[in-house]
Length: 566
Image (cartoon, rainbow, N blue to C red; front, side):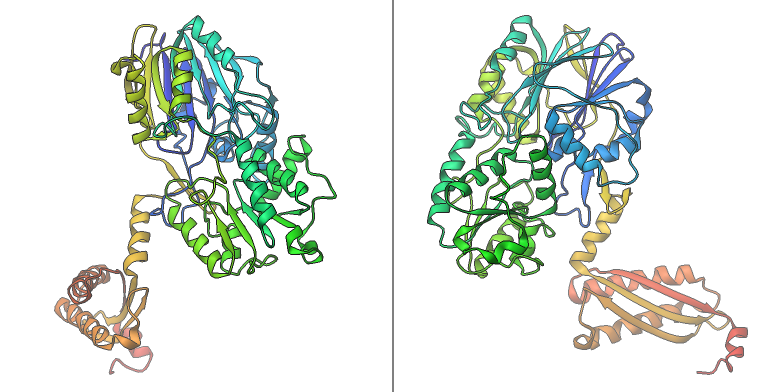
């Protein structure tokens, strides 16, 4: 039975996976949500645009939700807000200035989202939502204005690290506020929710400034244009590209919709310094020597429709990659994107570009803490219970091992899965129930219409293709009066597979003949599908989707068109 005096913590996403970070805190009659992120689809989720959590539990409790708190502006933390506020009554949103600016830019792309009450906060601010008191704590990450959270509840203090790393020489000159984390550690932390993404990597993450130093050398040595792809939200990285371009006498063109949008927001809010005499448009690229050009673009993950991917296959309408170009891939591959990234890189090499990526040069540093940084924050916070998040199962596993080495008993370390409810009291914590089962797939304008069955069919289509077979049958005699006919897509090339097609047509005729007069068309269609599937598997070792259409034609209709004789 649920303890109403306990704190309930539920991750709708972000545990056992990278992406769709969404956590729910409940105590008594109050509930808050931290972040509302998307996850990018896996390689076998054909046609899916993004993956979001199932919000059914939030819908059931929407009257209890006191607010949505955002830790920072990355897609995996705020990208699902348009879906969330259409699924439930929009709660008030709290976030830092840049985070809310990026949220508003995202919402402006949608026509049907309700108005949202947004409250700007800054690191050090404390807000109260129902029984929850929340302090925003400045952390370093790969986007400005990132925060961890200290959540004081009637049960105890919960510290949420947010996405973080230690950077002793950050671009904005604001290191992680370790003293504030230590303050809560001294007060006594009941539970610590910690970033675990880089727990497999020993040591410390290098400073973001080291990337700028590498950029300067590459820019100075580049014989022509420099094209650099990075995450559109990595404002510090973009600032370094602009700064190095100015130092090396280059003008900067911004390309890619999300890059253009984020740069606009960051400039308007004062997070990006981009002088007007440095920025140029696509139409001005030919007015300068190639050695005076930098292009900042999207596509660091090899996304097929992203700007760099389109350049790599010659389909970008305004920018053509040419011999002498230097292309920098300044990002870490998101799990599952490796194949797309290598394809883009190989295509760029074929076009004569020199491509530089992290295996060749230090053109990227992570925004997530390595082992020693994770140990440092864990040692400062000194929690009773630990929940690693923002990691796949292997990351959670190695975080637990690391935490044990620092003296935390294994039974106090929880490796949660999405929708599991962890009930926490001052004395114990335990998983008590699940409030959901599966994520929701977004495909174009549809949300949740694509499920496991549809994905299986899409996978089968991609692997084995589809076969359409049709025939018209006299309902009185059971004889075929038109057809059968076969068309295929992605299965075999019909003109070169006449023997197999003829055998398939004979199978259809045999099925109809065996069924005889009076057979229902649904029964005939099912029999045709079974027989052809078996035939194709036996002959070519493949099982395409078979779509059978049997049209029933009455004797009267046959007489109306001149008799039934064929």
